[in-house]
Image 1 (cartoon, helix red, strand yellow):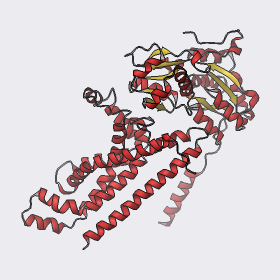
Image 2 (spheres, each protein chain N blue to C red; image 1 turned 180 degrees about the vertical axis):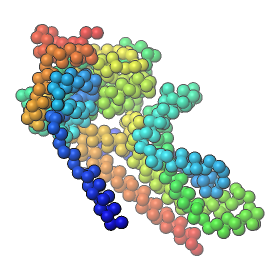
Image 3 (spheres, rainbow over the protein chains, first blue to last red; image 1 turned 30 degrees about the vertical axis):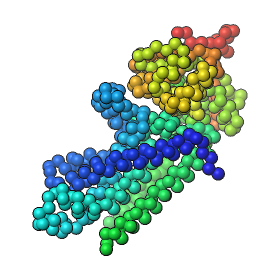
Image 4 (cartoon, helix red, strand yellow; image 1 turned 90 degrees about the vertical axis):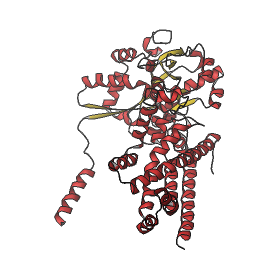
Length: 229
Length: 265
């Protein structure tokens, strides 16, 4: 029933790679930004919050285009990166960056919620016991927000698997390099007679997303058991 | 509170209510992307003589347009850049077969930033990224793949993952114009519109099928008098002049000459 060509298998493998890379790269940044938004008191926090949430409300195509303007040949960072031999447009890096930018707000939101849920009294107690901020961070905040980080990672991973607009503009449709599952499905829907292949890939996409969600549920449950002892 | 809800609901209903069909006649065109500018000018010329007619062009790659029409999209006229998609729609029973005729000709070129010189398709092997319309649905890509296979370079380039698939020929042109790729396969008519990219190589005609633009009325278009009028207008000398202005070649039948109509450089 599932009729997958070698190009389709490449697309599936690429989707997994891009989503994993985007999520793993974003976790440290997401954690830092969430910590800053919850625990640090600085003027201009609203601006940071707005910028972080922007990719959530912007059409992904706009995000892709803005990234293209940033990293393109005639862009701001493009020529600079090229002098170091780094190319973003139409490369796997571009696909990863597109997914990372689009999914970042989801990650930060999730971690923020987790951090805000931490009982104030633990933090106050640690302060009265003389712990420095990094001590509190490593021994109280990090472990207690673990579940939120995981939930955020899952959400971001699932979003990256479905990312289309920004990816096709920044990374283009290059089979074997940037053609992820959504791009492959799009190409099939444009082709007369490609409906069978499109449906096969849709099925694969649904199955992968389902597996990711189930994995998240089971790991969250294990975390819950551990913290409520 | 209750009266406000009633007002709100009735306002929403008005928004959702379908717009009543206009008085003017409408002509839905599904046109290959490479003819966008020419058709826009042809539309304007036709509308100037026929007030009350609204032209609604839909531009895209011929393959994706054919699929849309086959799935029921509104179309009175179909202009494809490859006979394959016209035959596809004929088989689907969407086309009035007696109205199929050749509208124009074109040639395939390789454009790019003026950095390298290309003397044959083999020179493409040293490039890093080459854009072409996706051969599955874009005629320009189909002709390009045909030419590259004839030159023996397609398999190598595809295996090295150097081919960037564009959704239509104009997107391929954009990639080349922006300098994001080392070059792109587009039509000469598109190359004339490029801002920064220049023609690096004219693909020899013998490497691919002749590039012709079949035109036809759809089954619905045959019943639309405005569509039929536009179909006739496209055969007029005025229309031919506009097409030639954009670099299209006229089909052999229209010139009446023995040779095939080719655009003059």
